[in-house]
Image (tube, rainbow, N blue to C red):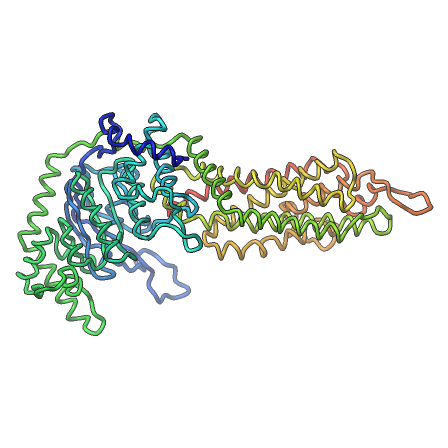
Length: 632
């Protein structure tokens, strides 16, 4: 973490850092070209015979982009304009290689005249989406240094990374608020415009030469929108290539753009300078009225109005055809051919790899962030701990000083152990099921930016959880165990502690798997109750063979609740001396176990081992599923 004193010290050094070679620079100037780029989506025929099987001929193609071409050179600030549904975001994501894999993409997208593998494009470019989500409890400087630590070369000293992080904040004008929290709806923080600039700074930290910005001014007032666009213009003038989708920019903002790309129903209606766009539309017979915003005029002219759809489509088709016959289109094709004819090799280091931190570095940064978030949001941790203590205290006093009376011990101690197992199993699975879905927006953004692997993130989640669970479980069990009057033996106590810890391990693993599979927090919150019901029924409180059909044996032997219950029962009842009043008891607690169908030798094997294996299996499945879910 970057301290305030450290940043203030580096503030005076940042100017001299340029002389030392620390300043952020663009590794390569990028000439981006795209020619005959087409994007298709397919959907099944709406009405089909319920007996007929679908095949490829039953799919209806939907053309999102139709053979579009363009070129962006170093220093170009390109605005992609068009009515809603014209294909602006589709074009931007196609160029940035961020389209869903189910879409069919054809055409040529080249960088300096070369075709770059899709998985390497993010190494050359930065991407800022419409909704850039950050962890609300982090400060601005913590966010930028988190990116610097994970994105920059691990060989760069920490102090130099701090300097580079500060310089990135200076470039976007955020140095004065570096110690402000990012915030969200529940916590006051920086403004929407400042979040946009912070998102840009996170892409500048590793010297991106190409930036893709999706609706960068959405949700901002006119002053803040102009501030953001000015920063983008300055970055373009420094040699960066920037493409930006924007919705109805004002006349002031329109003049900042070097080129405009006008789209109409997936086709290019014009590509060129913002002044040439006015000339082209005037030559096509759709001149912009005096004192009228050019962007508004273009969007309105290219829009498809529902009350006059046929006429609007004819007008748009006429403008597109006029552009394809114009000198502006020929110039675009000539530029593409000239760049492709003399390709400029991009530095091999910039193409082949992203300077990621080591696996340990990724894990430690994520773990530190998770712990810091827990410390800065004490209400959740405190509320969770207090609610758990209250539940245990209530249960303890309800079963206060349970006796070993031969007539009641089976129901009393057996019942309290079963309830204890349920409390820890259900509570753990419910909490962990919501953890990852609530963080999915942040995970997706950072994973696609190449900050860390999903394995590093998930391991940090697991370790952070048990930093909380291990001590809190010990305190809770210490209160409950001796209040209820369970076997007063340190070995028995720590065996019970280990059993509940493994039960929590398994429940958390199941919860994380449910959360990743569901993705949506509401869905993830609804699944655990229904999922645990059959496992509770087969948890071992009833005699194993009573009412259990063969078809339920799979659930029986996968019931982590059953394994936990059996372990605690054996730990408590094995060789337990029972109280028969004035008479000598004919049998002890081992007999009670046998009557309930529980093997007295089940303390360590197979119960604890089975719970560990089930939990490990769920965690491994989560690790395999998480990359797929985040990359979709």
